[in-house]
Image (cartoon, rainbow, N blue to C red):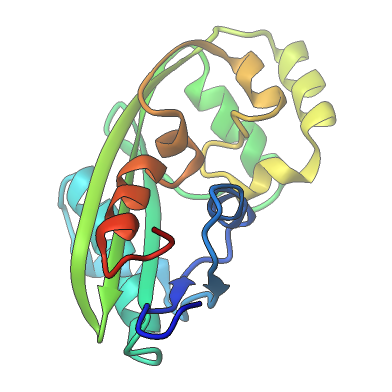
Length: 200
């Protein structure tokens, strides 16, 4: 990286986010944050999904930024809400199946926030939402889907990967593709291009 241009760090262990940045031509390092999302959510209290997603993204970016003060640190998080209920990533295949059964035939909302920190302070943030309606699929289809999808679905809060067989679960989708994958990529790239000439 050229002298004077800040290093870029992704504060996430998400392989999908890493792949999106890499394919977009961004040079970056991965440094997963050491945060407890359950504690953050409890401390946040009864806030909107937009606010919660931003709090989670900001916390991750700030935490890693405190150790890499000159770098541009990217933190991101998603919140899934369906009929007033928030969903966490499924802990195992049984929980993934339960997620899918609760979401089928309904519209759920994915709110994703991405923040950039430098020197321990947030310097940019973007939050977006996608509305996603699942088909009213059969029990047999759930079993078929889970067999085909494999263990990867446990890494997704909704127990699906839209870029894979998970697309078969849906009747309609309104929203940005990259937001659904977990990183509002276009506004992030625009910010990085204009911030100190990063990969200009």
